[in-house]
Length: 259
Ligand SMILES: N[C@@H](CCC[C@H](N)C(=O)O)C(=O)O
Image 1 (cartoon, rainbow, N blue to C red):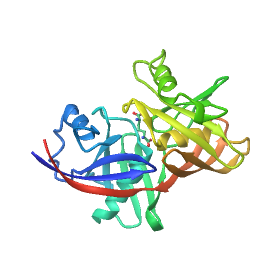
Image 2 (image 1 turned 180 degrees about the vertical axis):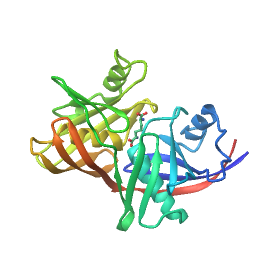
Image 3 (image 1 turned 135 degrees about the vertical axis):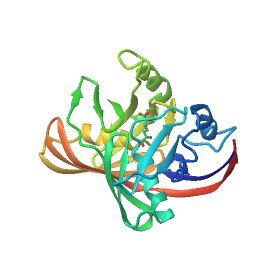
């Protein structure tokens, strides 16, 4: 089977995208998807997405982690799929699409900048050195003094596979606070490695680092793959709405691959 594919990246979080409006790729197995994402034997990516038709929406986003298993929401992936939909002519400057965690809106701005509305957050669990919350995917936020020195792979893997997370897993984000920004490095579940950026992860970090002000807040986020912005409205210490993940989403290359 010959598969035409498109490769996109958002702050270095990279994805293989398939145009599945025909339904031709629905039967791909998790082993085949993992092979397509393999960086040595395949195209190479942190995940694979299919853009599909869905009645009542511009499109549907179906997301798989690099291990071939269907994942929960991917923020950078969602922004890249919106850029792809725009390049295909499926949308113009706005999108309304369905993902595994529900309905999302998005805006395509100048120079490849894509803003994605994330699901509301209504539970934030704070512990002495970490915070847990779900922004479409589950996230563990650990505060660090200097993330350049953090053993992201070893520590992230240890936490992701420790009880009570071992069975379902969790994404582990190491976060350093600066005066005007946050630096974030993430160990991603399903990739089982550090990625250059994680959209739902930086969204979780921004919310976990919110100040006590009720109302609109905005955080600049620095990741190893580039800069993102998260805007949100704080309703209470555990309730956040109108959450937007904003940043670049870029076409890299396209091609065909034999399966
Ligand atoms: N890279 C993603 C997160 C993808 C989901 C994650 N790997 C999981 O399975 O929870 C992002 O940009 O949000």
